[in-house]
Length: 326
Image 1 (tube, helix red, strand yellow):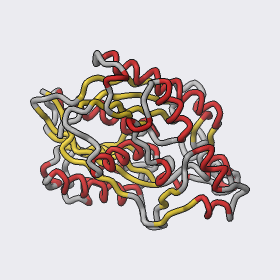
Image 2 (cartoon, rainbow, N blue to C red):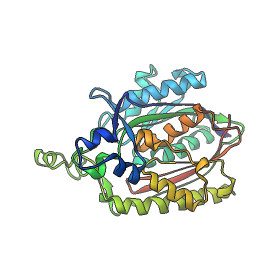
Image 3 (cartoon, one colour):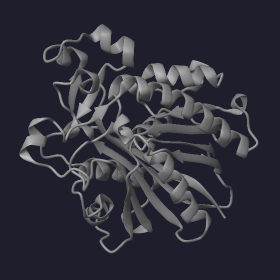
């Protein structure tokens, strides 16, 4: 039994935060941000807009594109590090609000690697016969975790969601995967407080302990190396080489990271899907959002060979080799 994608969808909040807007509150400029990140805009959730709201909007688009109803999906999975609540899982809320309370649902919390891990897990559930059809959503409201006084992180993150409906198929689109993690130095990219290690206190809140902290240089070096190594491993397991690929769809964290990884994989620019200029880093949402836009724009053709690759907090990384089925 194989697996294929039956429908894709995406959603981004209406409010936009531009580089010019950031110039007004930070010691930065459009040129500085663009040169170092490739970002021009990012979408920001409204105060009353939670991650489940973004996820539901993307899910509805995916269902419409697949000509399916919520009841036709056997299980709902949400990859996110910005859940509506610490618990219950946001997946449960999404399924319920789609009118299918009672369906199995759960979350995957592995930050920017969320869609890669989720695609591997969901494909395994379908290929092993546990479910016939699963909705996988990457959704984030990272703006709610950003310290807008910290130039190193305030310019990077945006909000959005991407959804993919996967279903059983006689032809298998899942070719191979490679996943990895290293939790030795979580402080390289983490949310310091709010968990059981460091509960929130007024003092910690005053020190922005509830906001994203990142060691940018360390993340950059780690990201390029791991994305390339993981992509090559997944390709090798699928008996493929980089030159066989139709597209590379990477996590949209930084344009320089994307370009460096693509260069080391000998991927020409026209074969690399990039939308970072519009959305910034949307963590687990970035790959499915880029994939959904590529499908909408009719870039993908039957039989195209794709590698999805990403990295994130954990530290975590991974890649999936996939054959597109129209």
